[in-house]
Image (cartoon, rainbow, N blue to C red):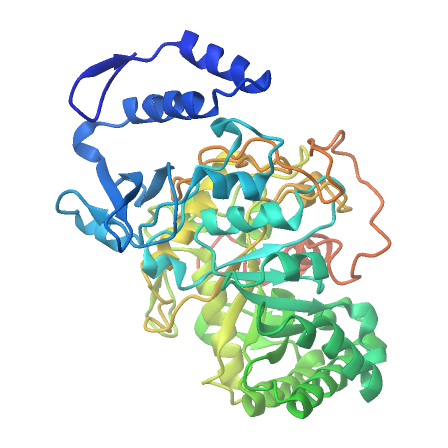
Length: 522
């Protein structure tokens, strides 16, 4: 293939040059720069000249240190050559899309440090998108679950998180490896305190020990901003567990106050959407009566401490339960005629926004109209069992891709148009040890080897190649999709997201918008 040199001449880059460079690298005879040059030329040859902008990075002393090529269609850097985290200067006027991206050059050696010297050639590295459009970066969060035995080491996860433009990560524990790996990264963290610890946290001494060990020890290097105490506790229908939730939250907050961390770290808990009794129409959303007392006290705690109300919402479950009745476009943020809430006269063109507004209505009905709401989980599986309708890579790509676009547009819901969408996508990785149906193990944006599960079309991630697991071995895909036993260390609140939610979707007899539809939103 012929590509342009910097001086305007033509150079032919054939497969023979790639093969010779790779052989040289693998034999330990050098050639790494030759291979990088080949791959850069190949990538540039696929870009239309008029749709690429060459950016140069110049140090204060005037020395040129790097070149980066930006593809406007995705709005992020797609080719990284040299160092160094300093603002880029462009050779010509940028487009509006290009101006929106924060452009930095990164040395290929920095990639090598991230992915290890075990991957000597450029195609094994992440073609790293340092950032996406600022409007998008502000609100994107990602859930980082680890119920698997083949995931990359946390050090290798840092560039993956950055590649999708995520600035917030939610954990289901307080894994020290992760918290150390993300030190000085600027990424905000919600750490989790598992359901199994709630009873212990009523003891002030144990609560203090937990906070000192799992939060204070990593501040300020790691930006921990919130502690999620328990996960979907109230919908386990466990009276003892539910009774321990608020005392545990209060105990943890008291420790934060004592340590002077309460302004930096908030305390909350994540709820299943199944805490709603009704969601039709969204303007008439209400909480379950049997949970009203628990929720009222928890909501009062949120108001006093300034912490957000977290809800896990999955339109996928509605479609899975009624695939012949629920319009697929409506749940995938695809163009559709939408539906009108007869109570508010607001039009909805996607199910997630209607679910969120039903939560706002339920909060208002209890007198908490001003409480901040964040969607702590939402996503779509890329694979499922035969009876799991809609679990395909294409549908997952549409759901998550369209959702991220909406977040980037800074559009609120019809009921709260001026409120940012604070949403955490589920999940970063496919997790091969999660129990339940096949879908449970296939919500990830990435496979365990670091390759995208599907192309969202929003970042500069093209290929990360193989990555090393936390024990130093090379990761590999799961050997089986059959149900596997859950790890003993897993939080009891995070083993399966589908079983109870699906039951709720199937059993509540409430119509939503479409005359023929059964319960879609709770």
